[in-house]
Length: 471
Image (cartoon, rainbow, N blue to C red):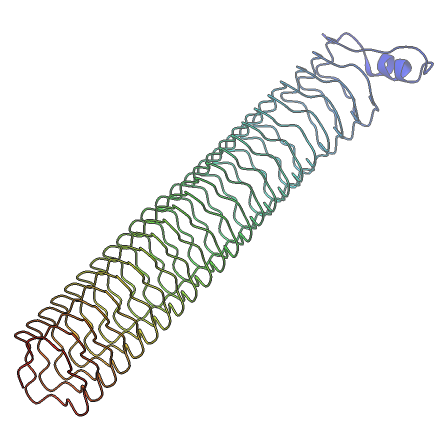
């Protein structure tokens, strides 16, 4: 039986304002308290089971550990109320005002909070597992270490919310506004972030394994050491995002916008970057073994010291890319645009560069042993001191190329155009220059022992001091 009747409560509420009023620990179960104003009152531990609280005003009231299960709460106002530790699981709270309320540690599992107003609310360690927060307003809310696993946050507004350490595994966040939100150490594995807005957010060491981020807007976000293993980021916009030391094994980044993004020391093993826009992106020291970069736009990309062994870069656009010391052994760069790219000291052994455009590229001291350059355009390219042993340059365009001190032992140069090429001090021992155009080429002090020049055009070629040349 309730401790008070509605009439008694109304009388107390209408009493002198200077009188200190408290309903702490009171049994108010089953009462009709609809429309009453409890603003600023102490109702901690009060029991409201089965009570009608429709339209009641609890603004700034203390409801800590109050029992609100099975109460009717439609249109009630909990603005700035203290509700820490309350049990509102499976409760209908649709559209209610909890702005600035303290719900830390509250049990809201499977609660219906659709369109609820929760800006600046405190929800640290709250249980919101499987809760419905569709279109809820959570701007600036504090959700640190909260459980939002499998929660529905479709089209919710979480801009500037703090979700550090929160559990959001398999949560639905499609079309949600998460701009400038903090997800440090949060678990977003398997979460649906399709079309979500995540720009300038913080994702330090965040778990995004298997998450879906199709078409998500993630400009300028910081993802230090985040885990995107198996995630789908197709068509997402990560322009200017910082993904330093993040992991992307097997992730889908096809057709993503990664202009100016930072992937330093990131692991993208086996990732799909087909037709991605990587202009001016920084992949220095990154691991891209076995990645698919077919048709990717990689103009002025930085790949210094990156590992790209076995990567598929066919028809990639990499004009003026920086790949100093990069490992591209066995990579497929066929048909790629590498105009003016810097491959100084890069490892390209056994890679496929057939029909690639390497004009004016720098390959000084690069390892190109066994590489395929069939029909490639390497005019004005710098191969000084590069290793081209057993490489296939048949039909390649090498006019005005610089191969000073290059190792071209047993290279296949058949029908290549090497007019005006600089081969001074180069080693072409055993090279096959059958049908090669070598007019005006320079062979000063070059080693030509065993080289084949059958049907080659050596018009005005400089063979002075060449070693082992036999016409």
